[in-house]
Length: 253
Image 1 (cartoon, helix red, strand yellow):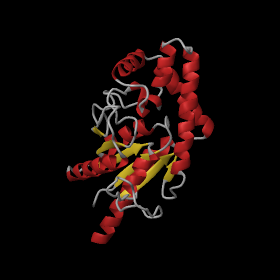
Image 2 (cartoon, one colour; image 1 turned 120 degrees about the horizontal axis):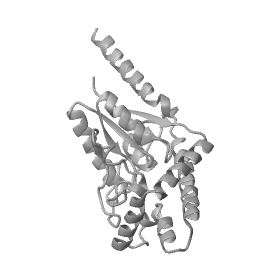
Image 3 (cartoon, one colour; image 1 turned 135 degrees about the vertical axis):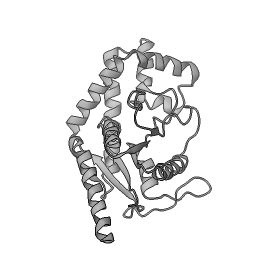
Image 4 (tube, one colour; image 1 turned 120 degrees about the vertical axis):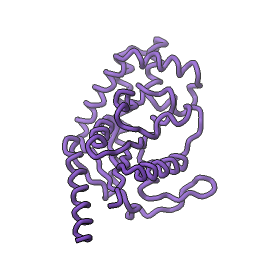
């Protein structure tokens, strides 16, 4: 059986990372991160990047690819992800693409074609490329807001976030987009005494909740996503693997 590529999407703080790691352990997979924040080196705690402990037993690709001041396009990510999918399948494992950057995911599953300016041509959003099965993690608005609040609180209680922010401020200009589109901007304002810790957390929650809403608006356009609760996700994937195996068996028989 030709192994499919599993894609797990959902809003920020939906539990995608943990679900993907658990799935990879169960089915023999390796993970490709589809996140436009975690591609940057030195941005670990503030982007909720999988920890080294989480990465210990499962190979993760798509992390720490460039510095925050380096250019990395959707075209670059698609080319990178396609190569890793090929390598993972060649090793006999399942590729698991996981992330909340909708443009990355769409570029891959709809096989965006880019011209010489790295701009994509028109694409038929009703037809995914062959070999992809895509799942979405479903939460209510109130549930995802609470998950974001808890994560922000944990981040701000982590001393590594403070030292990480100071190091980024030492190396990079706050005018560049990656520095302005993460929680680091609020940590830095807190460190300068402009806002309190509680206000920094409140702003972080507000910022990430609106990111989550934009992500869900994007993903809801894809009618081929199978939406399920976090606790049911891996069971759904394993059920689909068994179904595919049965179809192959029926053909051979």
